[in-house]
Each structure stands twice: as structure tokens, then as C-alpha cells.
Length: 201
Image (cartoon, rainbow, N blue to C red):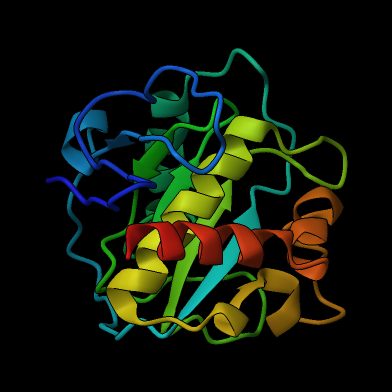
């Protein structure tokens, strides 16, 4: 499938991240589909929902620079089902250290969380790694921005409803980590999303 913004484009295709692009808001990002990385369906009961928010997470644990993201996704899916009893990976999209975007849990199924907030209605984006310890790269910020813009456009999510996990679970978590959260706190991510949406009109 192909999801297109006119000037700032998010192309959803099987494959890997496109070549480096100098301009941070005018670029294409390939999304690795579930079928491309080996996602499997589950018989565990799942709750359907309608998306009205976008929530950013981080993995919260160290992620080796040379770790294979496909191996990680498959391990995360197994852990989610076998250890947690969840129907799938808790997030709808996963962004790796290079800014590659992977489809995870289907968007029409509510996510899961280890904290007390109800993720129903939330489109969940997670960035692999611990952003209380590492810094978000320019490619990762591009991917978070473009993906959030696509989801905001597709589901009519207001800019003020793009938040971090900690906003819904205060005192329980630092997620999505200090270095990602600063882009939410100072409005950078919202401005980038707004610019992408303006360019697409």
C-alpha cells in the first residue's frame, strides 16, 4: 500500500528505509509491513477500538546498535503473547535505531501497557532503545514526525492529542524517555507534524 502526502510523503511499502534526504520534512519513508518481517496472527482475544490519539513510547531498555530489528520484533511478539498474554506486540508501529518503520499490532486493535492508563483509542508508536540514556537521531525524528502526521491526517487526530506515554501515566514511567519527550514538551514534534500536514494540502 502507498500512503502519500503531496510534498512531504510517507510511502508505505515492503522494504527498508529510503536513502538519506537532506530536507527533513520533504522525504519518503518506507514502512516494513507485517508480512515482510514475519508477523503471525494470534487466537488471543483482542479489543477493537477507534483511534483518536497518538502516543509516543520508547523501548525503555538498551538496544544494541547491531541488533537485527526483525529478530527483535519476532522476540517481542513471542514475549508479548507467551509471557504477558497479550494478543500481539503492544505497539502499532516500531521505529528502529536507523529510523526504519515497522508495522506491528494492527491499528484497529487497542494496544497494551505495563502501566495503568487505558490505551484504547491510542495509536502507539515506539522507538527502540532507552531515551533516558541515548539521543534520538535526525532520521528517527523524521520518521516519528512523518508517521505521526500520517496518523493525524488519517484519523483526524488533533495536534494536542499527540503526547507521550508519561502524560497518561504520571509518576509511573519516564517513557518515552527524556530525549524524545523534549520534542513533545517544547512543541518541536507538533510543529513538524503541522508543517507536514500544511505541505500536503
